[in-house]
Image 1 (cartoon, helix red, strand yellow):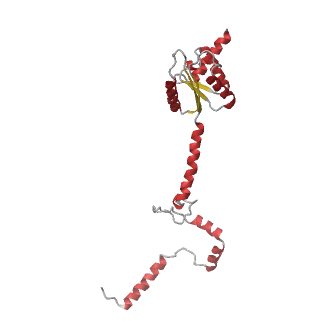
Image 2: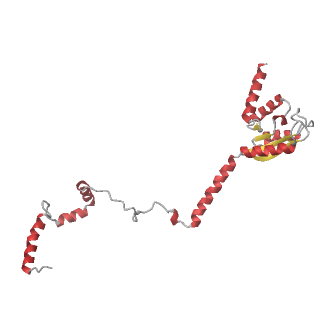
Length: 228
């Protein structure tokens, strides 16, 4: 450490002060206390002058969340477990209920004939159960005419009950049969049966033929009959 005399230190300070004044407030107006008071009493004018006179630089993000920013609402982490679980419990039943409503209700019709040309009743039930599960149908009713002839539609108790249901009760929308011949042995009777179902906005389906095919064949049949 070099020894410095007291007089030399005072001269160095005096020599340094003018340089600091020269680089400090050069070109600026002297401080006015009254002007400072007026600016504080008129905040809008003060803000306007600051916006026009100062260029703002965007603040640098530090990667940390702003602790002064107030959240828009309660965050999930701030809610108790019972509150969040109750909200989910409300949504799930509604969603499940909506899915169940959209499932079409169906009925099955089983017919066996005395000649044994149709499949046994047990095989027809299994085939319709598999078809309903594949198509997403809910079976709500079952009708059967065992060892019944296939010519007279309205003399079969099971099929007659199914027809009365589409007219009055409307418990289902789709009637499932294992084969078109389960309705009738004659194609013309099947077409008339399909026409009746279409009037009541019901459908007839089987694993080998969908409703659109039944409907298209029925319309073609009726057009052909109208030309005769």
